Amino acid sequence: MTAQKDSAGTGEDITLKGVSKTFATASGPLPVLRDIDLHIKAGEFVSFVGPSGCGKSTLLNIIAGLVRHDSGTVTVGGKPPREGRDDIGFMLQKSVLMPWLNVTKNVELPFVISRRRGPKTAGRIAELLALVGLSDYATLNAWELSGGMQQRVALARALALDPKVMLMDEPFSALDEFKREHLNIEVADMSDRFGQTTILVTHSISEAVLMSDRIIALGANPGRIVGDIAVDLPRPRNPDMVGSDPFQKISNEVRAALLGKVEAN
Amino acid sequence: MTFSLWYRIGLPVLVAVVLVAIWQFLSVAGVLNPVTFPSPFEIARAFGTLVTRGYFWDATWITLSETLFGFIIGASLGLVIGALTGTFRTFRTAFYPWVVAFQNTPRVALAPIFLTWFGFGITSKIVMAAVICFFPVVINTVAGIAGVDENAKTLFRTLGASKTQTFFRLTLPGASAVAFAGIKTALTLALLGAIVGEFVGASEGLGVLIKELNFQLEVAMGFAVVLFLAGIGLALYGLIELVEKRLITWARD
Image (cartoon, rainbow over all chains, first blue to last red; front, side):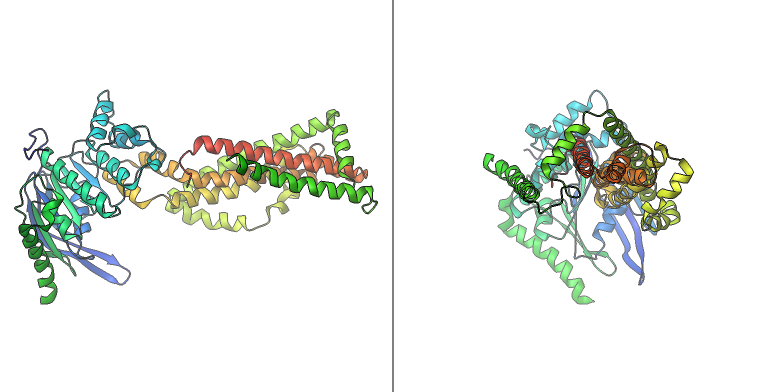
């Protein structure tokens, strides 16, 4: 893997200005996000880190167009977010493969739904499966795969339409430590190679440091930005960096940002 | 594996052989009244006579038609109503309480009414079979749709799927395993509905045959027909299981 950016797929800018969101709950209105200002540059790999309830997933869902914000403006590539934008790929915590479809058909789903299945689709799917290391499993049923392989299929599916923005909500949290680290490195390398703008939601500080160019620390009640930390570790990243001094220094910075604000309350 | 196969099939067969042997022994020993409780041997002989009679096969054909037509109508209606109930909230709110209320009335009690509405012919039995097998399909279809993975729905939203695409590519296949469990129950119930309908009033069918044979004190033949019906029930269940294995290949745990 090289650190060189592939010019074919350049990412898109993401801009949030004064974004707030309040959920209506049975026990009254619950403010989840207040006054979020954030600019993410094209091609940047950004992690949202914070305790549960800090609204990091809601923020991601707003950028994905799944949740409407109450006030403020959000643009992805200059346009407001919307469900089903081909330039945005989304990965959930679970792989959510369709058990009635085989691996190939699962990866084909975005083409089918966006009505883009054409003569080139088969070739593209083969390419995607090779990318995630599943070429030999193309005709297997989804339920015959291990958890890690299922998430690889989900990754291939999220990459299917060659998105310029990848949004990932704790994509590998259901996997064991080893597989998780392995996939994290692969995803970091891929976004590096393809130059996508990537947002990762996670509650693991070390995962965020290992993968990101920049970490946004979020505080809870209501969710707001409490830290914006640059990760100036060289790319490509590898698991050995975890123990290094600069890695520890950045981790501590993130931890301080998260804890500092909690203590101030 | 051979051992476990012999074990799985051999053991229940052994149980049957022992029970039949005891039954035969009690008959020969004179413990059982041969008129009201014929021996297995007598029943087998009666069955041997029955299969040579045209009216037996006519009756079989009638009952099977009632069962299958009733099943097809009842299960199809059940799927449609279940899909509407599971998909549209207004439909569910308006109709589902009535579906549940109707499900809890003993539908067998409707058989005499269907007889006055649809006559002694095969129609009243088809209606009875359909009404009886309709509910498990509705309930299972609704449950299947309710059980569709929320994460998968989110995924379809991120892909920008239309309502129609979501229904045909997620809801329908996602609900099919649970819905099919209802369809399996429905087929067995359809046979029950057909026989009940025939008991209440009919001119032809295996239910009619059982009643007539009992009136004539041909108890051995009556037994033979009941065992034959059990065989039909099993065969239908086996067939629908085959269909299920073909259609729902992924639900193995």
